[in-house]
Length: 368
Image (cartoon, rainbow, N blue to C red; front, side, top):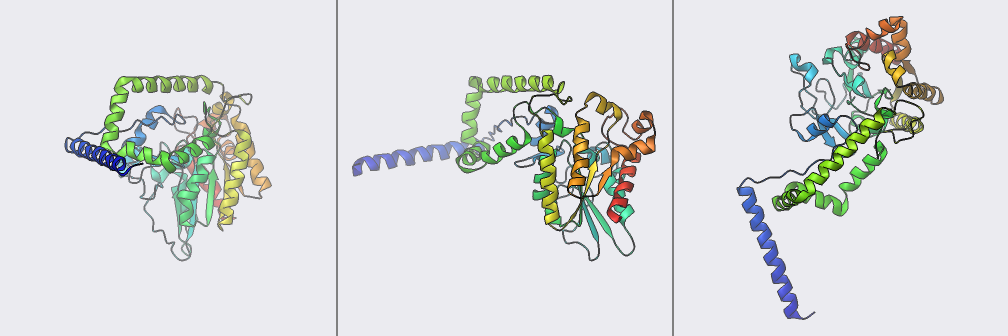
């Protein structure tokens, strides 16, 4: 290449860069912004998925967890107490990372039942467990790392990214209540996590950053959307949602041949992996076979398989087990008695009395 041609290419590149810089500056001065659309996670609830990019929402997007409670977000069921998510994304009061001398530190990992969906913090089993375990010679703190909509696969990432840093003495694992069996349409949680990690790595990550932060790139995206890209994207998402609804009607049965968020066999392997990783950190593990209303198991028979796998894991790994299903049944006596331990009209989430039963059973298992 001749020196004259090189010079012309350099001038052309410099001119293009200058034009882009001027365009970028002008768009910023004018206040232009066109946020990139977030493809719905479609693992939990479309309306809740849309709130992941809302700074006032309860949850925020996470590359490896998929979502997590947004630090300092207001908790709807704790509004009367002014409750907010802690700065490290767990539910409950702020804590010092360094544990007090002689204190017992417990971390609870699970889904919405562990998070305490529908009840204020004092009613959650994590809060009640802390009160039951505390003694004059042994203060106790329980950190609630439960997340609404979580599976055991997400729980592994939750442990690695958040809970493990607190070096708990005991970790409660309460997975398999409902979310794992849900139809995933096209991608299991494992695949979504892998795809999300790949999307922020290498050149794909650079393109993503430019799309999110460069006004010039956002202008180009807006032009493309007006040219039909947005309509095509919305139609594709609508089709995926329709397919999800169709498959959800079949996912409750063991014979379901679609893709689950976490298949039963995978659930067993992941629960063992998470338990082993936690034990390697020096913490004790307590497994929970999560309670549900009897009607929920009647219309989703496969849920009993997930419960059986939790119980089998406890035996195979020699871990203490709290069978909340049996605890609720023993206390309630009848289906109606068990139903009375859940929020009204809710098949999965315990009320204060249900949380109290679980807390008492956990305290006994931890102090055994």
